Each structure stands twice: as C-alpha cells, then as structure tokens.
Image (cartoon, rainbow, N blue to C red; front, side, top):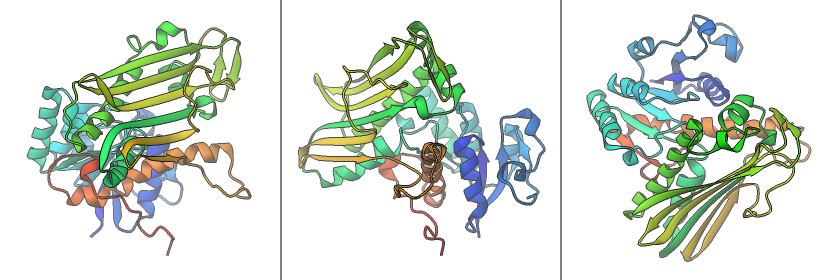
Length: 355
C-alpha cells in the first residue's frame, strides 16, 4: 500500500514537494495545509496544475490532525513546536525542513514535549534540509567514516543573496538593506531562530562523535554598503546592511572543535576581510586523513541546457524538498522517537531515471 502523506506548507519548497508526491505511485497525498486563508477549500490542482484531485487546501491544524495519514512533510516558513507536537501525538510521523535538525539539543521542556508526543502517537520526528541539513550534518557525518583521528571540522557556506528573488526573506526577515541595529542578532527574531538551528548542526556532529561540548558561541559581522544599488528582491540603500557573516563554534577545553561559517552578502563587492571559499558549501576535516569536499546545486551543468537564473536558484528548493520526500519510507519504518541525520540511512530517490 502507498504511504499516506500530508503536505504542510506550499511555499517554494513545499510546492515542489507536493508536485513530486503527486507523481509518486508509492506515496499518496491525503491532505494539504496552506497558510493563505483565501486558498482554503480550493482543490490542490489550483497550485500543481492538472485535473482536480478532490483534495482541498486547509489551514486548520484540527482538520489535519483528524486525517488518517502516515507522515507529514512539515515545511512552513515559520515553524511552531505546538503544531509538531499535535501532529506527532495524533500518530503521524513528521519530517521537518525548517527546524528540529537535532531536537535533543533543545531546552529540556521543549524536548520533553516532543518525546512525550512521539510516545503517545508511536511516531517519529526527523529534521532535514540543505543547510542546515545535508551540508553540515549528512555530508560531514559520511566523511567521518574515513577518519582515524579528527582534529577539527569546518563547514563553510558562501552565498550571494542578490540572486534570490524573495523579498520577504531577504529584506524583511534577514534585514538586508536595513540599518545595522535592525539586523543585529539581539534585535532580529528571525536571525535568532537561524542561530539556534545552526547550533543544532554543531550539537549533532558532537553527538555523533560522542563529544560533550562546553559551549557553542555565535559571532556576527555586519557589513554596510558604501553606495545604493538594486538586487532582484529590492533596493539596498547606502549605509545599510549588505553583508552578514555568522560564525558558530563548538568549544571543548578552550579549543574550537567544530565550526560553521556562513558568509552571506548582496551586491557585487564581497567583503575583503572575510574568508574566501568557493560559492556553495565546503566541508573541511583536519585529522588523519584530512579531507575536503565542495558542492553546489544548479539546474544543470550543461552549457546548452537553457537553464535560467530562476532555474538555478530553484535547484536549492528542489534539493531541500527531495531530502524530505526521499526520507519518507525510512522515517515511517523507523522506531518511534526523535532521530537525526547521523542515525538515518541515506535518502534514495524512487525511480530516479524515470524508468
């Protein structure tokens, strides 16, 4: 029998996930949660195309909880633990892309709620994504299998947000184009949320290596633009934020053992005082042996592909969606409880060559 799946969230990642779910013969869509109130009651085909499916959008948690389903792909822009607890307690396995990458590191009260919900529903919680997720969790965990000794782990992400067309995330939430005080970590709730989920990556790697870290620290470096310019999502005025660097480090006995360096900017000028890895994600492990990998996601590497800039940008959404979709069978068959990337088998696509 097909696995019954609910899609929660229909943004760029959620919509991509939903389209794939509808094409899979081993998965059956039985419900879709969508934030927009004016979409409630409409057939999901209004988003995905094709003939009506008989499945209607809802924005009611109670309606979703009442649906008989095996798994929920939880992909809202803003995550809420209350929603995840309700889904788990109702007997539905939950795969998250916005958080819960290593829930074991959450405050005790929150983690206890998750554990109790999993026990009540005999359900499983798993968080995955591109970064946090694959870049800083699955990839280094796989590399560590070749290690005899590990001295230091470093994950770098370099990204120019000028190519990202979502104004809400780039300008309103991340505060590119805003005064420095608005983008400061202590004043921006969205960045505070990001701070916690990236710290989860470090906590998971430490757990995989059986290391009890003393602390995880965050350093933020904001760079202001010298002149005004436009990017795809809007306008960047002079003397507003055009660069944001976040440096997370996990410490043990005064030594930084695991670090993540996120180097994000807009515009053509990359800050000269920042490290200069290649665009994309780079994982470096110092030890015996020392190893380094680098990867990017694009729509195609073929020069004659005809892929547009939008296609290349959207490839990251596809990657995030598929890490969740391809994990469904493993999560559904897993023992009840909270699992993380280093405890999961690899996600493998279904019929990848369209056979």
